[in-house]
Every structure is written in C-alpha cells, then in structure tokens.
Length: 138
Image 1 (tube, helix red, strand yellow):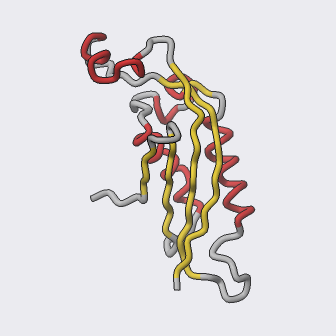
Image 2: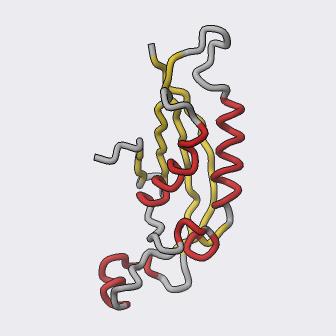
Image 3: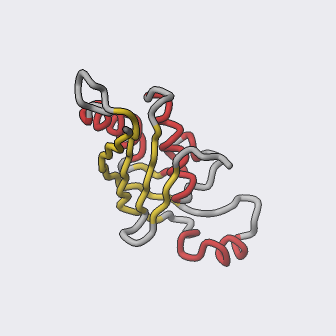
C-alpha cells in the first residue's frame, strides 16, 4: 500500500519572462506584461508530495518535519524574496516560467529522497494558474 504525504509552503519572488534571442517586440507579443524589463512578482504557493510505503516501525511514509525542513532549506531560502532571473543561479540561462520553476524545485529536492519514494511538485503562480511536475520526462 502506498500513501501520498504532502506539505504546503509559500514564497514570494520576482521574475521576468523573456527570451534573450528574441526582439523586445517578439518577447512582448509572447509574454505580454510578464516581459516587463523591471520584473514583476508572485506569491507562489507550493505543494510537495512524497508517495511511498508506510514504514511499519514509524507509521510514516516520511516524517513531515523532515519534508518541512528540506523545503525551507532547499527552496524557501533559495527563492523567497528573490529576483529569480538575477539572484537564483538555476535561472541564469533558464526562463523562470512556472513550468521551469517547478522542474528546478523538483531537481533540488529529488536527491534527498530514496528512489522508492515518488516526488510530486505542484506550484501555484496565481490562485488559478498552477503546474504539476513528477519527474516524468517522457
């Protein structure tokens, strides 16, 4: 039997969506207001889930405190109140779309969990716009 355990987190960050290989006009046509050269921000909501078998000794899939501390150290400390384009190395050459942010979060967290545990990242950029990434690279 497998069970999914989830933890919610929050961070605020600024970004600009643009492709440096395109003209300002093309960036503006594709990304609109998100192409603002002065950046713009979001109040991101994050849900990180671990799915696995329940440990018969502890009754846990994962100790939620461990999950909480990992999200804090690996994600919140790295992203909160940051300009993603400027201050987060992973986005130096990667457009910080919600999709790419979710993949970066996944990649930062995945090494901390055993291979028999599944990881899922859900990132809300707004209350109505969100992405889900499970590491499935098909």
